[in-house]
Structures are given as structure tokens and as C-alpha cells.
Image 1 (cartoon, one colour):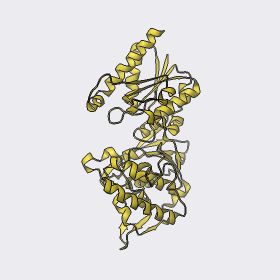
Image 2: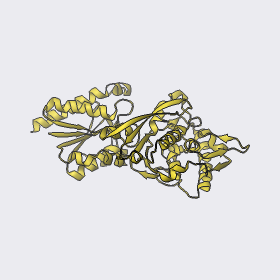
Image 3: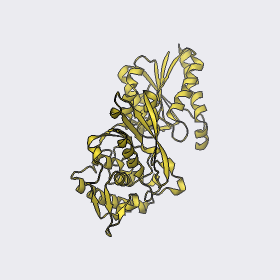
Image 4: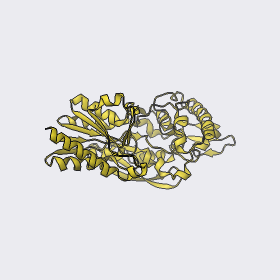
Length: 379
């Protein structure tokens, strides 16, 4: 029996790889001769760099950059190597540069956080000869429209008094003028893939601020003022660059960082599909008996581009059976059930969320063991 274990992370409790390893142990406890292929996956958020590096001949690089609140931090970058060094691709994970988990809950304030570190990382990679970038946009703490990143890359933002603004969410409302010509010219020779499974535009009721601002610490009053400032910011960026991107799907990802990367010539791609291709998932499941995937919580929203459904689609292409095991399942699964050969929650009884998160690895292993005992009996 061959089983492919291709999980997303269980946010706050299990990494993608840890989930796969736990499931692999359970399968092998029932079928000792089973061949288990653990394939860490992500959708552009946390775990993207690790998944890419572990999937092939990649390596890690540590860069010193400015974190979301201005403190220096070490960011881990993935490098996908080519025959020539200048042909390598750098994979950046916003979650590890200006991520929400890097900011204590009591200090979360999108008026203070900045994407500056993303720009600093890109500059350092350009200095190393890199001209191909993939930027995973999940899990940011920022709502600065990418202003911090653009400032680090050479754009100049000034207020009415001529003072230079370095770029955080609170600076958006103070921008009086933008000088675009200082953007690092090496970016014109570069390709940027914007890996996200968020389709939100920059502004409006489904935009970055109104949908994601609250989870980043914004009060309703801050959301309203940030939305007005973001609209004015978009006017000025588009005026300086001579084109419009605010309505593009993904422009609102990572607090508007998607918008800024589009303005630099980036291309939005599905983070899940890009990684599925990068790890050769289809080829690896072609001769498998089962594919098991999952995430922290699955419900009807999962069908809108989340990674487990993308894994199920890849399995369907090869005619491989696919099972969903998640931390919890919504009451109305609806169309989700049609995508999988079975949908299961690893939680066995009513219990506090904190306890579930602490015991996630054990619960996942137990559930997989029982399911494969059932499969053994059915044989």
C-alpha cells in the first residue's frame, strides 16, 4: 500500500510536516509494509518555504531584516537552485518577515506595522544576483498597502511638510507625494510571482482593510480611517506608476502587499497550485492507493481555493482516492463532501480549543490509526 500524506498546517498547533509524520506513523502501525510519502504543503502562508526546500534540491538562507514592529529579525528564505546561480529562485514567506504571529496580541495595531522587511529581503537577494522571486502572502500583520516594502525598494513618500515617510499603516493618511523613479532598477530584470489564494481587491467592503483589518488589531474606527487612507494611497501609487491594480484579484492580500507587488510587475498565482506543481504532487500520487490531506478547520469555505480541495482536485486527476482529516468540520459540509472519499474530524468529544491544539498530533495519529484499521478489516 502506498499512502501520500499532504497536509496543510494546523495553524497554531501542527506544521504541515509534523501532521504528515504523525499520520505516517499511524498508517505504518496498521500496515507495517506501507510506503508513506510525506509531502509538506502550504498555500503561500506559513510553511511555504519549508515545503519548497524539503521537496527538492533547495536550501535555506537567513537574512536580517526589519520585523513588523521595527525590530531587527532573522527571516528564513528558500532558494530553489538552478544550474547557474543567477538562475535560482528565491521564495519569501511574508509570515516570517512581517507575520501576525510575530506580534504579541496586545501589541497588534495595523497603524504601527510595516512591510519594510519584505523590501529589505528583496534588496539583499538582488545583491546576490537573484532575479526570480516567489512571495507567499499569507499571515501578515500589516495593512500598509506595501508602502513599507516600496520605501525599502527606493520609492520616496513625503508628507505635506516634505518629511520622508518610512511606511506603516498609519503613514498612509499622511502621503502628499510619491517619487517612483528611485525604485531599484534591477527589478525590471526580475520576475515576481505573488503566491496567494486570497482574491480580495485592495479597497472596498471585500478589500484588505475591511475584511482582514480586525484580525490585525484594527478597531472599527481605525478600519474606517485606514480604508479612506488606502484609497488615497492607491490613487497616488497608480498615478505615479501610470496604471491601475486596485481591483485585481489578490491586490488586497497581506494588507495590500499584493497591490504593491503588482505595481512592481508581479503576477498573481494560486499559492496552493504553485506549490503543488513545485513539489510534483501529481506525479507522486499517480500510483498511490490513498491521499490524505487536512487543515485546522474545514467547512464550506474550504471549497473556495483552500489547499485541501486543491489536493483533492490533483488526486481526482489521477484517479486516486482522497481523504480529508481536519481539526474540526463545519456543520454544513455540502459540496465539500463531494470532493473527498471521506471527511473526518480528529476531535472525538467536546473539548476546549486550547486542549485540542495541544493534543493535535496525538488526536491526528489516533484518528488515522482507526481509519486504517477499518480499511484493513474491509480488505
